[in-house]
Structures are given as structure tokens and as C-alpha cells.
Length: 495
Image 1 (cartoon, rainbow, N blue to C red):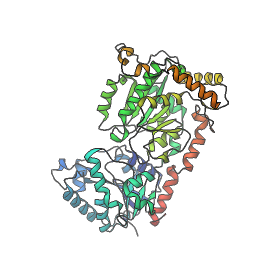
Image 2: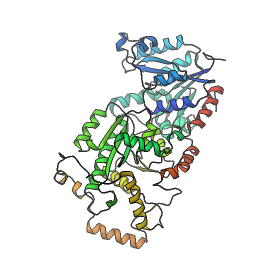
Image 3: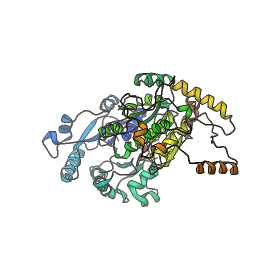
């Protein structure tokens, strides 16, 4: 049986086609599908206000809808884009009417409707089933909800998805996402299929040429760059990220014990990719923290993979996630990653990842980042030789160091600014603590500087690339492999 246009066509339901996690993952799959057999279409949402109607048709909405980021890519790959009126809670009747009309008009065109927008999946998937769509899938990609009324409403709307028989299949990007959306019962009886957020691993593998080009474009050729990729919204926790970065700067500026002396005088930048509703607010916070000149708000980038190469470290303090592809991408690029332990542990695939609670102080995250940037490796290595090697590595990254931590002429006196805030003693160990630490080290016969024995060199991303990519591929994060598995599913209706 054919489902329109000579191919098996799959309808993906999303909020939009912007640069979000779900959208990027679906587009990666789409590019790697055998499109002679399988074609994707997209059903997105848009405000009906410009149409002057409460329940406009897809054609009427598409006529006023502003093109989104992936529109051209979808069209070039042979896909189609349709539109529903945005659901706002008070337009349930009009929303249902639009969905019923849509599936009636397109009866028989899709073998599968895959709903990635689970907040309203319990509304549109039952209508799709009644219209004759053979396979209806709810696909959970988030392990949490926003705070407040919006989050409560999302939980209520998702409740029907926790009943057996509500859908034909349930997919989740991680176990945490599965429990969050589909509930304990469906997860425990095996009614949820885990489909990791796979990426094109080779596309993100470390590339020195791309690194040098992007760093030159950004003006950070001789800087140490901490990176983050994610939309500016509640879940991503940018306010904590900015506070962590401010503490990194302050720790270096107040390093009375010279714990990070090799990093002294080094230019340091925070590079953030993404857009979103909280971006303006975060720019104001950066100014308040006196770090705005050291932050790069880069927006969305079509070549985001190149920007991972330009980074030296990756920080990801999300409040919740399903399974963040950006952390997988960062690992593929060979970056050390400090990730919130609120994020699903499935993302902790390689030795590059450390997880830490966002309930910890921002200064603790900052210390961890600086400790990681010291690039310690083997337990048996000679500390002096290791320090020389590290200094050479950092000099290669940053060149000659001329920058103070806060470098502008109009920067306030940081010692005065920090007075009474706790920052002035941020990195100062009391004599009692110093004696206790020395005694513990002697009793346990452990070195005061811990080193990690691992199967690759932390400081050599080029050398480690094959090893890291191999581990990610073995963990199921390779999009080419996943595309073949889903091709089979779309054709046969089972795995």
C-alpha cells in the first residue's frame, strides 16, 4: 500500500521548525534516510491571529506564517510543511476542529504520524487514528516541564498518554523522558521504546582547520573559550551558566594560593549559541555581573558543528532535559563537559563528561571547570613535566597573555566590588583546613594533585577523536545507524 507521492510518508508534528533539539535531531535523521523509500512531512503550529479566524485551514496559516529555520532544508529534501493554529489552552474547540479538518483533507497520505509535541499529543493523535492513520506515535523528548501554570497545564494535558492503548507506539529519547511523559506503569511494562537522540558523529569530529577559522572570525584566536549551545529558555538555566562564568573570572582574579597560576593573564570567553525569549534578560545579567564584554551571544548558526571546534570546554547546567544532543555533539568534538546531574545519565558516555548538581554553588562549578582546564592526566606522571606540557598547550591556544581578568578601562575596582560579598575569600584556604588536608593526604598516601588514567589524552582532541567517536557510536548515538533502524520500522511497523 502506498501513502501518497509514491513513497511511505511520515508526518512529524512539532511546534515549529526552528533550531531546537527535536528539530535538529529529526533533520539529521531525515538527511540520512533513504528518501526513495521514506519521506518526511511536517505539521507545525502558528498563531491564527493574522488570518482573522479562530480555526483557519493549513493553507490559510501557511499564507501568513513566517518561514522558519529548517523550511528550505525540508523543501530541498522533498518534504512538505503544513500548519495548525497554535494551541493556547482556551481554544480547545477551535484547535480540535482544525485538526479534524486537516486529517480529513489529507486522508490516506501518511502511514505514520509521529508526535514530538507531547503537550497536545493526546489531542491530535486520537484524531489522526480515527481518520485512518495506521500508526500513531507519541515521542517524548523532555524529562521535565517549565515552572508555574504552564508546567502544570502540560502535565495535565499529557495525562492520557499514560494509559495503555492511547497510542500505537511510545518513543522516548531516554528513560527519564519516558517516565516523565508516559509514567511508571507504561515504562515498567515495557510499553515505551527508547530511541536516543542520535547525531551525525563524523560531522562533529574534531577539525583543527575549522577551529582556527571560527576562532579567527570570533576574535578569540588567543583566548580560552568556554562554550554552551542551547535556546535561551527556562530549562537551559543560562542565569546559572553566567554566574558560573563570573566565578571562573573571579577565581582567577583572586587566586591568592596560585592554584591556577598557569591560567593567570589568559584571555577567557564564554561562547553561547542559540536564541530564545530569555536572551535579552541574560544579556542584561551579563552586564550586571561585569562579564558582558567577555561573553559572545552568537545566536543560531547553520554551521553549529564548526563552533564546537572553536571551544575549549563545554558547560551545560540545564534544569531538565530529555537527552541533550548538544552534550553528545560536544563529546564528539572532544570537549570536556561539565553537565547538570538533572540531565539524563544516558548522556554520560565518555570520560569527557562530569556531572554536578545545580544545587551546588556556582563557585563550585567554576572550580571544577578550572581544575579540568589544568589538563591533568596520569597518576604516575612527573608533575613538573606535566606543568610544562600544560603551559605549552595553553600558550598554543592563547598566545601571549596580556589581559587581566576584567580588562576594560571603565571596569570598577574588583577588590572594592567584591568586599563583603564572599568573593574576596573565594580561593583562600584557612590554616586549619590546610593542615587537615595535608594530614589526610599523608595518612591516605595520596598525591595532593589528583590525575586521571584514561585511554586517551585529554589535551589532544585530534588524537582522541577516533576513540571518542567509537564510544558514542557503540552507545547508540550514531544517526546513520539509527536512520536504518527507523527505515525498517517505518516500512514494517515494528522493529
